[in-house]
Image (tube, rainbow, N blue to C red; front, top):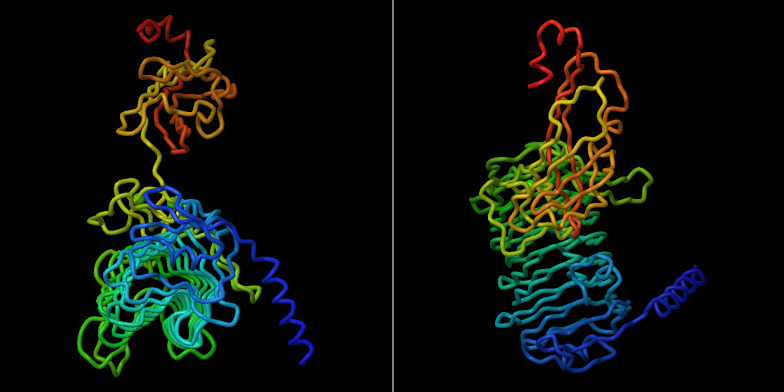
Length: 496
Ligand SMILES: [Ca+2]
Ligand SMILES: [Ca+2]
């Protein structure tokens, strides 16, 4: 056995040294280059107040936990909005254990961490990110594969003043032997928005655990396929916690291995009061999955708008092989979560979903981390409006106009225009503020005999030059022309 252990140890060391491909770490002030460093901590230590540490893609194996300084700074990847860049800008926790990143005593500072993958942190309490007496902004980060002997493998909030804001983050595959696989707050008020929490693991509270946490908020998140071995597969609240959960999907979370209670959200505590307010969420298993400790005095308040139907992800996560395969947690077009969020929801400035798509689309917010984009509506008139299928005719025209704040017909990508999802135009002409699109009549009718009158519904759609979708609806009346009727005095029909 000794030899096997040694072999694995050596292999890991070799892998670690070959994988570590570090790029340049720059200090920037007002977007201007100041200096560059080979280690991230050196750059942080030399970054002036208000400055930015910019990290090129690469895998950075750190020797000691990154510690934020006694100044306001931003530590960022080069393109936080690009998931591929975030996925390849990796900070690996210390080889012999320790946090990846520490935010301590930053109450007076604006600290931002963005556009990075935080992984392989490991500590007795917490693992990836440690937060005490500090309220950093953590955005567009992936926090994955961190571990803890205790609680909060992804993020550990250690005191009443630990109130980080997390936006557009992914917490995945973090594992705590105790409480809160992704996040544990012992006091403090973390705010978690537009984030995906998937495949995390703990004894209690597979995704989150809050203990005397003051006022944590979970908003517009998708919390899926997390596992608790004992209690509360997704969220566990204890003591004086006043949690708000809104517009959030809970699906596929599991309690396993002789769990006490099969439950998604659980609250307990000896002081009377509400632990959690839940509004406009989608929760698997319904009301039975929301439980409170029978000996405790805490309650959970299920407010309005919560649904228990299948959110209809593009692909569900899969545990069947014994190895968890994450799904695709975008919503299908038929999802009951679309436009089912809080109708009074007010997005903050430039709020986007995890894809970077605008919140809100289609007038109402969707439940969960994915906002499904609604196509820009175009006004369409088809000419001729009446088609006699047994008389000759070569073309059908669509006149397209856009009444939109952001776009005109001149930004339509003509190559993408399509009728009823299949028929390509023969020609596209640009008039002043109208696009005239010509289709072959036979492409549409396929010489199909029309027996009687039919109203043909048509959808014309495409993309703008920037990829935004647009579509418009119209119709044409199909008829057969009967000479017989014409001779019997119905000629008005023809000459009208
Ligand atoms: Ca919507
Ligand atoms: Ca989306």
